[in-house]
Length: 238
Image (cartoon, rainbow, N blue to C red; front, side):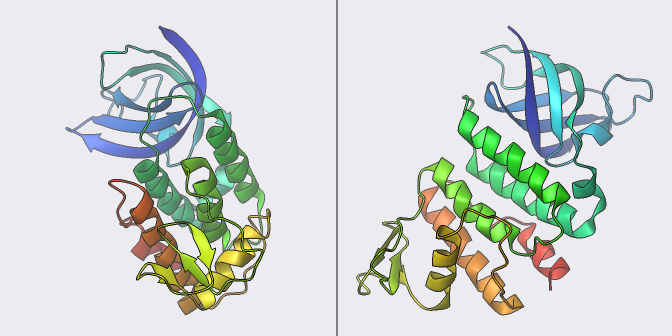
């Protein structure tokens, strides 16, 4: 089946001396692994390794075979230019972290238009944004909406949040209940649809809230683990 669609690069892995294995979240088919043979050494090839930077948005043309674990790209071109994401050290570090989170979170080879549109739109906004220090935190909260464990709203002002239930509670009912500043920050995120609204956090609170969010992901997603790029993110934004 010949498919023309768009996709976001989630990961690239070097294979042998000249090849790449690239994971792309496509608009048409969900997450697909592609084998790019000789791309790291071929000087005149149609495909260039520089095209496949993390979270690049590409227009793809490939033949899809149901019984194959990896597909082969016939043509790839830039679909949406996100140059600022690649050139700005802070944004590129954030993209490295978010790409790893997405790779760990999205496993399905199936279409998810709502999630794809959210990602594409959010990355375009980040590319143009001038204030974005807390973007990754609000992005992770909003992402749970598409992954199936978006927290319930807290209309009663309860002081505890149950990480297992994804709900606010009036008392601490288990070891998975949290309270304090992380609950307050979570409420801030849930009460605003603006991913770029400053949360006015100092470094320690930002890191604590990120730790809580990643633990929330670990609880709800099989196989999820703390991204290796988290340490780099925290160093750059220290």
